[in-house]
Image 1 (cartoon, helix red, strand yellow):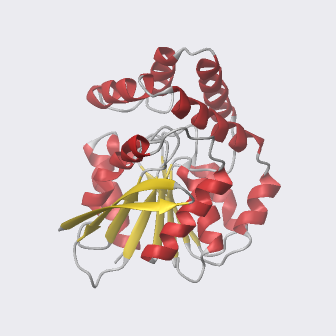
Image 2 (spheres, helix red, strand yellow):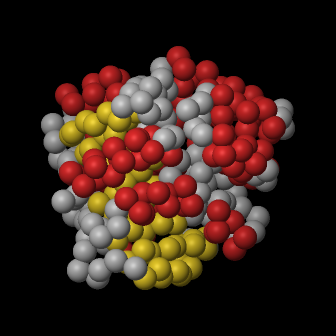
Image 3 (cartoon, helix red, strand yellow):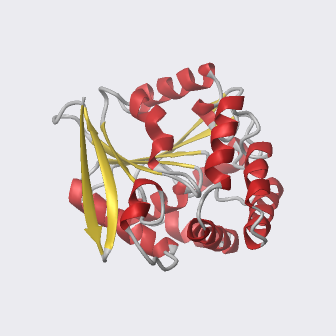
Amino acid sequence: MVIEKETVVFNGFKINVERYIHDTQLKSAILINGALATSSSFYNWVRHLEGRVNTILFDLPFAGKSKLMNDSLDIITKEQEVELINSLIQRYKPEIIMSASWGGLAALMAMSQNTDIIKKAVVASFSTTINKKMEYYILKARDYVYTNNFSELGILLNDEVGKYLPRALKRTNYRHVSNLDQHEYKQACFHLEQIIKLKDSDYRKLINRTSTPVIFINGELDEYTTSDEVKLLKNHLPNSEFYTIKNAGHFLDLENKKASLAMKDIFTTIIP
């Protein structure tokens, strides 16, 4: 496997891009991460997909390896984020778009705008329904950011959506989340505010635009983006498929070995 790294400039932003190339004849997949996450959270997926597709990872201007290359950033809206993703799709021509958690919103938006290139979407740990558990988590996270209580934010992450993670990953999550800078917190809060204001009709307008196949993967134990709630999208996405990983919560394959093997098996099925 060859890893190619480059800096892509879009609208003044510098974007760190890493491409994991197994075979130049293979299709490519671009991976979209969620709030407070970086491209490094996808290394498991890169291994799961090895030999099936080449993978494209990137960090948004305010996150991960892109952050040090961008000074004095303004808040980036979800629409601007999707424009950036669109530019990467136009540049690298991936046939597949894959996402985790709230990266699912940007992935679905980008998919609907690039149907000539994107032929399949894989959306994990995402639902268009903001249920009571997710609403509590979002509002509590927002409150901690507004009061600069970042240590409690790290604890909240591990107690709620990360409750099934092993201890080592909980420690990593806590260190990462409690040590982000002010801009990253404000950026995450802005996106959460955008998400919580979305109505079912907004999602219907989005997903009704496309006939692209969408595969949803959710954890059996996930109370925040439940498999039952996401299956309601079947009425609006006739080409959709749904997979549920047993004994897994919101973080799916990161939580235990069986969930990791199950995720790999699903990838084997949907990307032959």
